[in-house]
Amino acid sequence: MASALVRRARGSPAAAAALWAASRGFASVGSDIVSAAPGVSLQKARSWDEGVATKFSTTPLKDIFHGKKVVIFGLPGAYTGVCSQSHVPSYKNSIDKLKAKGIDSVICVAVNDPYVLNGWAEKLQAKDAIEFYGDLDGSFHKSLDLEIDLSAALLGRRSHRWSAFVDDGKIKALNVETAPSEFKVSGAEVILDQI
Image 1 (cartoon, helix red, strand yellow):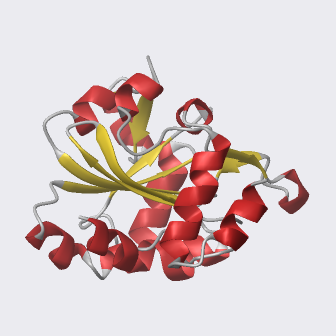
Image 2 (cartoon, one colour):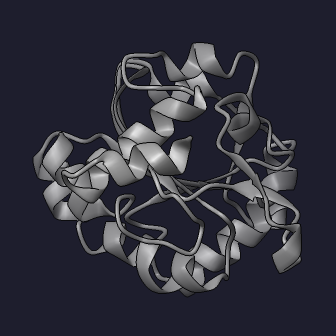
């Protein structure tokens, strides 16, 4: 059914992805991202020593989204091809344009631990522009029905490739790729036009 909806969408790739997303029933435009994932917290990327110093603290979603304009994007995992070569760089290279549109923070979230994400963010030289958060147990993505089984690629349960513009917790735009290897609708260029 979802693929039929995508084929029927004759507009932009973003319109096709929106139709596909709507057919799956997960968090959608207009819904509250915090309410969609009740009780979920994320782990800010950090070194092991920073983790110890903060007593392995987590960040509740309300602290990330309430009262703020946020662009958030999810991806299958740190150190993977499209994620490293295209997805993160699209946001890193567009940070000034996003800030000029009033965005308070740009967030990358993946089903990884915060230490792996920290090392990856440093390697990509993106930590100053983008906030990286781990969804260690995948509960955030599962709550939003953005989880995908990538066991065939030896990754296990991960995140779909997606992006969203969230204003004070409300999802204003949501883009989900039809396959984790695609990079058509979840990049910074698309979300910039939706803000």
